[in-house]
Length: 273
Image (cartoon, rainbow, N blue to C red; front, side, top):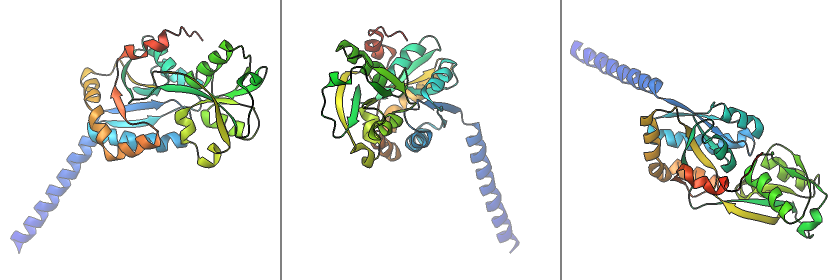
C-alpha cells in the first residue's frame, strides 16, 4: 500500500514538474509585437490576425502580440518610432521605414498585387470625369492604393477632387453606401472582406494600376537567429490549418518570402508626402 502511495505521489510530482517546465518555457519565449495597419476596425483586424499569429507561434515557438492603432496616421507614427518588432504595412509605408526606422522585408502576400479601387453606390452610372470638383472619401493621406494611387490616377485624367479622410477603408465603404459621398477609395482585399449586405450596395467604378502588395517587415534590431527562424517559417505557416482559414478571411493565398528590392516599383513612383 505504501509502495502504491509512493508511486502516486511520484507521478503527481512528475506531472507538476512537467507543468512547471512547460510554464517556464512559455514564459521564456521571445515575444514579438506585431503591428497591423488599421485599414479596418481593431476588432475585425484582431479576428483576422489573432488566429494567424497563433498559428505562426505554433510553427516558430515565438509569442506574437497583436497590435494596431486607432487610425493610419497613429500607426505611421508608431511604425516610424520602431514600436512594432514586426508589422504589416502598406507598400508606401515600407519605402519610408525601410531605411529610416530600420525595417527589413520578410514577406508579402503570395501571387498578389495591390490595386486601388473607386466605389460608388450600386445605381451609379456616370463617367469617371463626372467626379470632377466633388468631395470624395478616402481612408487616410498615406493609404497607398486607396488614397495615393486613386488620387494620382484621377489627376492624370484631369479629374480634380477634394479628399475627405474618414479613417479606415470600411468607413469609406459605409459612407459611400449611405450617400454621404458620391464615391470613395479602397482596395480589392478590404472591399471583398466587408459584409455582403454592405458590398451589394456598392459598385467598383475604377481600378488603378497594380503594384507590389503590403509588406511584412521586421526591425533590424531583431536578433539574427530570430530573423532567420521567421524566414524559415513561411512555408510551414502556409500549410498550417488555422493559418489557411485566416488566409481565406484575408483574401490571400498565403505568404511568400520577400526582399527589400521587391518594392522598387513603389520607390520608382517618386511619391513625396
